[in-house]
Structures are given as structure tokens and as C-alpha cells.
Amino acid sequence: MSFDALGLCPELLRAIKQQSYTQATGIQQQAIPVILAGHDVMASAQTGTGKTAAFALPLLQRLASTKPHHSGRRPRALILTPTRELAAQVAESTRTYGRHLSLRCTAIFGGVSMQPQLQKLRQGSDVLIATPGRLIDHIERGTVDLAGIEILVLDEADRMLDMGFQPALERIMRIIPKQRQTLLFSATFSADITKLARKLLTAPQLLDATPKHTAAVLVEQTAFWVDAGRKRELLAHLIGERRWNQVLVFTRTKRGADRLSRHLSQAGIDSASIHGDKSQNQRTRALSEFKRQSVRVLVATDVAARGLDIQRLPTVVNFDMPNNPEDYVHRIGRTGRAGQAGIAVSLVAAEERPQFNAIRRLIGSSLEPEVLQGYQPMISVPAPRSKPTRPPRARPNNWRSSKPARRHYAQPAAR
Image (cartoon, rainbow, N blue to C red):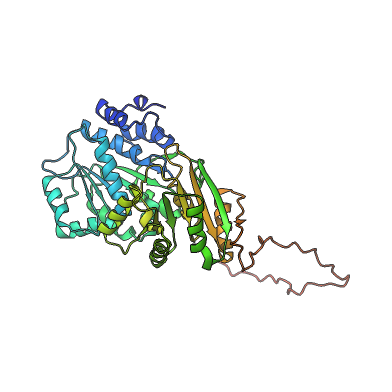
């Protein structure tokens, strides 16, 4: 469906065309008309589905078409995101879509000095994009006024709960006006997300643009059995032999990310790491160098990688299998975006068989790891476990149950 058919104003359509977007994605087709009509929304959208435009475009149009309910320079829309990278990405996209509208957009997040953020807040902003922790810092300092919020967006709400932001979210909700439009976007609808939605949303429209837990259809998935101690060696071999020029690699821990990045650099493969212990300047520099392909490999943890938007990323590698199978879907969703094909490779050690099987069950895949010549695992790979079926034991003719007979006692009358 064309964006022209979704009821967007000429200024937004002009900005969309300047980005060379022509057809709306499934979540955009569903969400934009509903949000423009003023309804609360609870939407399931995986990464790479265009969900940022799905809420940013109608949000900007609603703000541009209505007068603020207050005087002064209070923000009228609040977008909460779990990570700094996602906040920066959403802010960049919102500014791009709203370039022909007289609306100001400000992003605030941790890991950087508060002074530039304070200056922008004093200048006034219509749309505020924030991580919960840094927003709480500004609330406590009295440097932000949320009394004028008309639209609230929770982006990647599942990840915010996973990262322990629920107390911060509850505190923010007590401050912003109860009369508002609320949009909740989440990759999964867990029991906690459903409970949160009941508290925050009023008669929400439920939107689901993709089948649950589906991996990106344009991503070619492969896997290799390898001993844990030879994963770094195998990864360096694959990068060189297959001539991968831009590779996003996922590790389970921050220390593992740094160690792998050093190993690859020592092997002559330019690489950088990104995780929560890095300063924001370090993370921004590493991401910028990776996008420019100044470094060939970016090694990241799951939390740090949330919100990374890399145009035409060709290859993703699962160096460590994630403990949470849903993280696998998020990881490989970094490639195969915007109609482009991608490759996702998993390096699976014998002890990671349970995590790999959980991923296969989640996405409904029969993918089985291969053994690459020269990297055969020394530790035997366990065969898939199947539930044994035992024939019923024959009972002797004089068999009697060992359970005592049930006795029935008279119940006392209710008083």
C-alpha cells in the first residue's frame, strides 16, 4: 500500500519521498490510520518492520494539526526507549520525517553530559525521546516538565521491562497527564507486558503485523558445530574465506565482546566492541566507524545492540547462543531489512545444544548445524533428546494397589 493512501499530510509525504520510501510496511498500514484516529495502540512488531515510522509519522501529524493544551515550551509527546542507541535512532528518524513541520525534537539519554541536554530543554521541544533512567534524573533536578504530554509512546516495552525499568516507568506514569493517547510497541506480549498495558492503555487497538516469533524471511540462516575454545578461530576463518566486509557479532557478555574484538584485531581483522560499560562517546564512535566500514567487525552484547540501525547490513553472527531464544530473533533481524537479503550464522558448542533447540522450537525451524572441515568438534555433539517410550509393565493377577483406600469422613455442619 502506498503512503499516499494512509491519510498523511503533504509535508510528511514529501519527507517520506525524499527518503525514497514508496510502500508502507504491514505495521505502518495498520498503525498509522488507527493512531491518526486518536486510539490507544498495543502493537506487536519485530525489529526491521518499520515500527518507528509507524508511530512517528501519525504522532507528528497529530501534533502539527492541533494546538497545545498549555502555554510555554513543554513537550507534547514523550517517546520512551530502553537504550541510548535506540533513543538516538528514533530521534534522528523523527527529525527526518518532521523536517517540513515546525516541530522540535530532543533526545535525552545517559552516558553523556547533561549540559547540552539542559540547553535544548530550555529552548523548548515538542517531542521528547528519552531513556527512563536519564528522564528520572531530569525529573529529580526539575529540568523537565511533563505536564503537557498529550501522546506517550513506549518503544520496545518488553526490553524496558527486561532491563528493570518498571519502577522508573511507574514513576513517570504518575507524573504525566492521565488524559493522553498511549502507544505501546513490543516484540513480544508477555504476561508482564499485558499487565502493564492494562494499567496504561484505554480500550487499545491490538495490532500484529507479523506472525509470532518469526525470523526475518529474507535472512539465510546457517549454523556450525564447533568446540567453544575454537569459536574465535572459526569466526576469523569464515570472515576471511567468505570475504565478509561488514559483520555484526553477538556475544553473551561484555568481557567476551572485548576479548573477541582484541582477538580479531590481532588476527588482522579490524574490529570494535560495543556494550553497556562503554561510554556513549565510545559507543557512538564504534558504531560510526562500523557504518563507514572503517572497521570490519562490530562485536556487541544484546542490550547494546538494541536500536542499532545499520543500512544494508549483510551478515550477523551468533558467537554465543542467547539464553533467551527470543533474543535470537532480534539479533538476526538486524540483517535482511528493507527488502535486502542477509546472512545469519550461529556458532554452536555442544553445551549450547539446549539453547539452540529452544530457538528452533520458537521459530519453527528444522535447522541443524553443520560440521566444517578442519573444525570438527573434539567434544561429541549430543544427539537430540527424545522422550523414551516404555512398554507398560505386566501386572500379576494377584496385584493390589499399594495406595491406601480412601476413607470418607462426615463433614461438620457449617455454622
